[in-house]
Structure formats: structure tokens, C-alpha cells
Image (cartoon, rainbow, N blue to C red; front, top):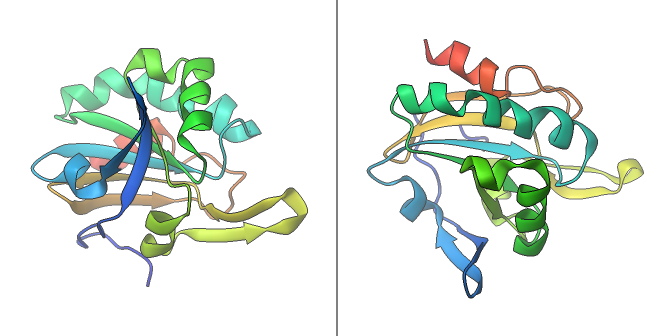
Length: 163
């Protein structure tokens, strides 16, 4: 089943880099009682993800905060080391975007957002999407038709659909 507006997010463990190394963090801890944006990319360091998707949320971060969003979270089916380095390389970490890995794609699969594209070397990856989540419930969900597109899932696209 694919996640839809009005659904509660499934709980899963994600991993991020902390001061002491990799730290497990649950989706419920990130979302319960909070307003957050979660956006997912097919892969760290890939073209559109690096040149368009992450920069769109860096550009729009203040607008999201003005609308009550407490945290912007980037999810990719990558390990926390890659996500941490990618966050530093793109400026996302300095901008305050939380970079988390879904290393085994458990969260991605639970959302019904996984895909595989062997010719591109992308196995069990996440579709490109962005969502507004309020207290664990999906309020706005924008999913791209193709992993190479970044329009409705960009920061500006999500802001437009938030009204």
C-alpha cells in the first residue's frame, strides 16, 4: 500500500550521524507532536538530488519555518556516513536540514515508495517525494512521476500545495 494524505506514518528506525557516530532515530520520535517536512531522494550525490532537490529546501527553509514547520528532514536509502558527508557537501547541514539514512529501505518500503532501476544502479531506492507531516499524519504529499523530475516535490512545490 502506498501512503496517502490522511494516513499516519508507519514507524521505522532511521539512522543519522550524531556526535558519537551513527544514532538510531525512530520516525515517531521525529514526527509525534511536531510539524515537519520529510523529503526523499533516490540517492545521495546523484544529479537532480544534489543540484535541485536539496537546494530547493535550503532556499525555502525560512518560508517553511514561517508556516510552523519545526524541522526539514531529508531521507535517502543510504548509510548515515554518506548522508552526513552529503549534507556537508551541499550545505544542507549548515542550513539545519536533518539528513537521515534509511539504509535497509524499511521506511521507504513501508510507505510504498520504493523502486528499482538496475540500468542506473539504483536498487531498492526511494521515489522522489515531499510531504508535510503534522503529529505523524500526512497532510500534503507530492510524489514525482519520475525520479529524474523535481517539480512538485521541490521546496517551492510543497509550499504551493500547503496553501
